[in-house]
Image (cartoon, rainbow, N blue to C red; front, side, top):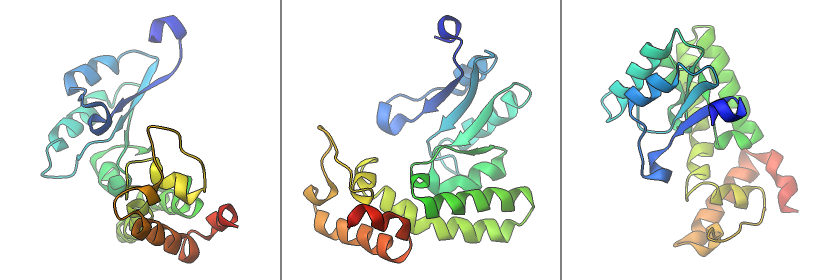
Amino acid sequence: MSEETGAKIIIYNVPGRTASYVHPDTLISLSQDKNIIGLKQAVDFRIGEKYHEDTLRVIRETKNNDFTVLSGEDGFFIDMLEMGGTGLITATGNIPEASKIFVDLYKAFQAGEFQKCDDLQDAARDYVEATFCRKNPIPLGTMFNSPLFQPMTSVKDTARGDEAVARIMKLINEKATSLLKYHK
């Protein structure tokens, strides 16, 4: 695909959606292709977790290539930055208030304000939990009052869906007020 299209490519390593894990050897090899510019690492890469060493290896062995490793786990953005990753591809960032938190977190990290980073990651928690209270993008459909198409279903039609919708609406009313315009 790289040769045929010349398009810039970011590899998505998201085994929770694909039931397939891209091995570090493969990622390191692909990082040498000038059109493959990065990796969205959506696995548990925190210290002590299954994919921590793999993620560190990819970051270390691709740092001299034109290749970036990005967090695909909204709740662990700070962890990725601490490991040497460079950013975040985020679902939660669709919420403007959450996006601002992530931008501020990145800036605080760059400035060496690590306590502020921890505080900001904590501040993002409610947004992340709401975004992932069901399989993404289903909760975003509720947040933006947007239709979903099969095989997806609305949050309210899931087990204990009324409770989940109530939590989402509480977040919108209290913290994500920019989304109120979708619920008039």
